[in-house]
Length: 360
Image (cartoon, rainbow, N blue to C red; front, top):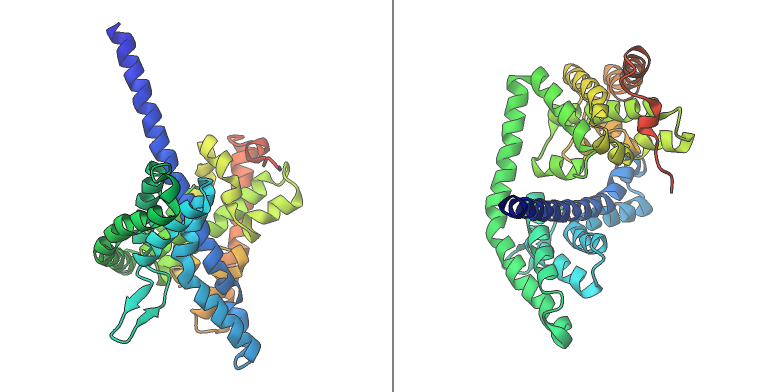
C-alpha cells in the first residue's frame, strides 16, 4: 500500500508540474504573439520609409507603426487571453494590469508620456501573475464580475508590477551591459554561444525577440544571434525540402523556423545540425562585424529584418554589403547543404521524414 500510495503521489506531483509548465508556456506564447503583432509592422516598413522621407503618407505610416509598439502590453494581454480562451472581461483585466505596470507610460507634472515598448521582463512577470489571478477568480464575482474583476486584477497584479518595474528594468539593463562587455572581451566565443542559443530559442515555445529585447541585446551580439537564427532556418528548410511543399520550405526563412517546433521538441537530434551551424555563423558574424538591434536579433531572415538592420547599422560601403550578403544568404545556404549532406547522406542520423510538417 505504501508503494502504491507513493506512486500515486509522484504521479500527482508530475501532473501538477506539467500543468504549471504548460500554463507558463501558454502565457509566454501569448506574450510572444503580442510582441510579434505590435513590432513586426514597424520592422517591415522602417527601412522602406527612409526612401520616402518627407512624404505625408510615409510620415503617417511611420507614426502608426511607431505608436502601436507602445500597445505591446495591451495586445500581449489580449493575446494571452486568446491562448487560454478567456472571455473579453478576463482578457481585458490581464491587459490592463500589464499595461499600467509595463513602463510604457511615464508620469510628468503636466500629464503622461507614452513611449517605447516597456520593460519586457516585467511584462512577462505580470502576464503570469495576472493570468493566474484571472484563472483563480474566474467564477468568484458572479453578476458583479464586470465591475469587480478588472479592478481586482488591476490593483493586485498591476500593483505588484509597479513595485517590480524599477528592479526588473535595472536587471534588464545590467544583463544587456554584461552581454555587451562580454562581447568585447571574448567576441568569438560569445558569438558562437549567442548564435547557438538563439537558434534554439527560435524553434522553442519561447520568443527569441522577447528575450533579445529583455536583455537589450545589441551591436555585434545581436548580429551573432541573428546569424545563428538564419543558418538554422536554411538548414531546417534544406533538410525538410524533400517531404515539404515549396511554400512550407520557403516559410522556414521567409516566415519563421518555429514551424518546426513540434518536430524539434519531439526529435531532439534535430538540434545537433542547427546548433553546429549556428555556432559557426555566430563566429562568422563577429568576424564580419555584423550588427543589429534588440528587436532585429530575434528575427533572422524573416521579413528581411535581420539583413536590412545589419546594413542600416553598417557604414554602407561595398565591403559592408558583401558582408551582409555573406552572413544572411551565401554562407548560410552553403552551410545548410553541407550539414544536410553530412547528417542525412553521410551519417544518416536524420531522415527527411523527421522534418515533415503536418499541414492542416
